[in-house]
Length: 107
Length: 121
Image (cartoon, rainbow over all chains, first blue to last red; front, side, top):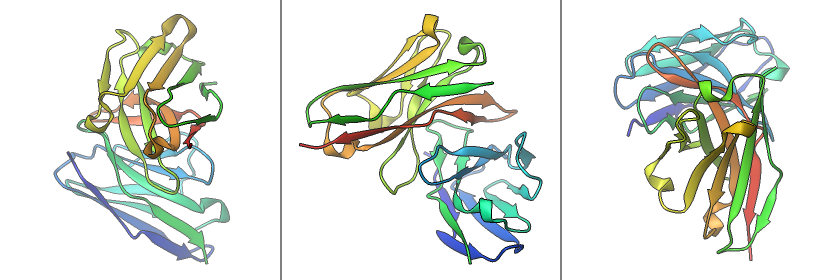
């Protein structure tokens, strides 16, 4: 199985700050990576797919990058509504696997 | 608009069974695979497997072979998850999620609202 190691586990940021979350795959996943945001009591929402493509309707302050085994999600200019838990997911091989999540809070 | 609407919360005793439904609307049900994802309280996301909505063939992740059954009511655009012989560790929220096929990988573009299943004696 492909293991996804996500860091940091938690993060607090000020309004307007740039935030970066990392995800490392245990093998090359050829940019087959997605990022999701989950708010308390809600289902995850797709933000980024294919490592860097922005899902329709997602604000442009979200961006993704990376290749091979190393990927990152960047939020430029943190907003209040960006609080939540962020997960990465590889969709290249079964079983699909998720990172353990990063809890992002406003400082 | 595209929606996946799941059934309501369940409270069950150990050893009982539960069936969760996921009704899709706003798209052609058989054009997209349906997946199931487990989230234990305060924990991360775990992929359980998927069902081919065209053929009805299910595929299960290793940890979900045996007591878990994916099924369809295709005429009703509904996918079901049945869990038998419930255990305390089955207490979790269960999500259905549709996948969209990317160039090299698949991603969950629409999710149900989740069903909380509580197993307690």
